[in-house]
Length: 401
Ligand SMILES: Nc1ncnc2c1ncn2[C@@H]1O[C@H](COP(=O)(O)OP(=O)(O)OP(=O)(O)O)[C@@H](O)[C@H]1O
Ligand SMILES: [Mg+2]
Image (cartoon, rainbow, N blue to C red; front, top):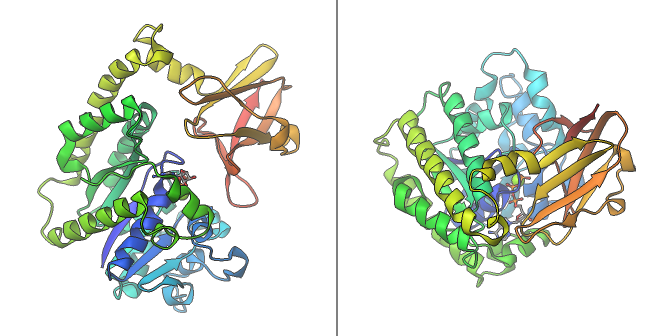
């Protein structure tokens, strides 16, 4: 069994798309594969048309009982998706695992224990993680032979990558096993100059830490998940399918070689990737300086622009919300200030880069909100303050003075 955890604390960078389609393509090529959903938002089940109301037990039940005498085994929760392809679904209860296990010994080893007992029949286990760092992601890290970090080929994703690597750096101190860490260029849009430049730089500095395969932006991949199918079923002749078949082969070859231990320690790998990410950030700034939207800005203002303009900002008598969704057709805001009615508060697209914004007059108090991006509800990726809602999902928190 070879285990790959798909991790990035940045929301919406393609983790679930990669985990689901990589698992499907490993299965298509004859490898028995288990996909484990560690995200309480259950997007794997949604993307594979497993009816959520019929999932009686999920990975939460397996993890919470994993050290008990009458533990629930994986086989009792697994759904067969297609030949060679099984899913261990998640559920909203998973969001409660961390508080419920607080203070308990070896709580971060639960998943690795479960897999070592129950998953030896699988050639590959792929783990989809939530966009946050906590006990769930840590369990996935402890179970991993390999960590796959999907990174959108844009400046803001690189910004996220540096943060992600800092986090992995802290977490890795508690991991004894050797892990290989690789970056996957995802949602690559060859038409964008910035994406091309960033990819070239990534390749130049960083070829050993990157998958050779690139996952292009392909609308068939988006459509496939909204139809509840992996790309191998939805459109096997698509470019998306070709990309994922290539990734599956690369991963399989790498896994075979990984029986030999990696030459670099995990610390050295992280340092190498971090350094590259910093260099890339610096170079991306230069590239961005040439982009039309930034042409009149002093180069040093780019960093300031990120901190200042994305997220929430209180101004006299109003709060400004700004987010970057370059590929969205519609972005709306829903919160307890508008009875969670997103259609009342659409954001306006403010520039060609895909910056969306809205201003609301809000009285002092604490509010919860989410964005609705092309119909998908999600927390504000630029606001670290969140709370878990009754559905087990994250709401963003806003405090107006
Ligand atoms: N290569 C791609 N081409 C086109 N669309 C893509 C691609 N990868 C992901 N998407 C789309 O981008 C959106 C976000 O992707 P996805 O849900 O996989 O991200 P995620 O990292 O799992 O998000 P979260 O952090 O919320 O779990 C989805 O609508 C998905 O269909
Ligand atoms: Mg996801």
